[in-house]
Image (tube, rainbow, N blue to C red; front, side):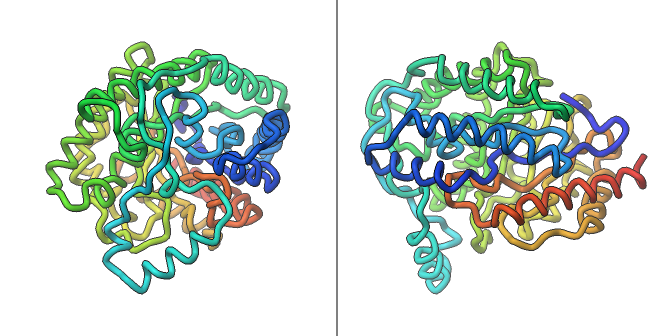
Length: 388
């Protein structure tokens, strides 16, 4: 895993805006409508080429394929795993429940959006979970590798994402396994195929694990925090088992409280989960610190230390607003994080979350996304002049 040895390296959290025709096809497919699968494949491949070039133009050092060939950060698995079927509606969020007027506005906003929902119409586990065909992830990796290697301006390091077994286990209701532990274990074995494929193709693996914070105010909203911490422990153990053959320094773990513009005042504090997150077999943590509810929590690293071999990707760009952060704001945020970590080489500049975690549901206009990433790069340059 690359460190910021001479300057603060820039990265992001994975998903980037998808072309409108591709989003429409993903949306239609999710509703069970007939679609041209060859056209989805063609548009997805073309989108990867476009998004790789756009990241480098914006100054991104550690970039990816933008998840263009996936409809959503975990729901793409319904086309890759056996045992998923039917549908259900996820529980509401505690922070939305607490504000009836906001809840009404929230529901109206999202009901009108064409795209892939991570809350409504989500599949359930109705049979044995197995990875259907490794050729799918192999093809995705090979295409990204070809696009990356053909580029004249390559990433300092490329990465690819795959979801945590925990987000799948809680989002896709269990109606098959006798326990959450058994369900998690099956998902871990299936996802191990993707984890290992990504690393084998020479990419850094980012495990997207919003469940390790988000689910406190969804699945566990009516339970004591200890119950949620137990889930986090269980999921981290499952992730570690799935990473048995993957070197620690090839993995970074992304944890967040959900990519929604809502009160977030029912979020679990980072302090309650950070000691457990640090047990993960990951050489880096990716955490949101531009988020106005959690912007202060980088200070925890004064007392709850990273391991000596770990880096921190600090979210210094908000993925939910169309404000373009001033580069000086970005630089100030990075400098404060570096001061707490005590070593700027162990800090990378990142975004709080993905900009289009489910196709069509991104809240930031595409042209603003690229402006925000350019500001990220400029802010990292300013901070680097001061820190190095």
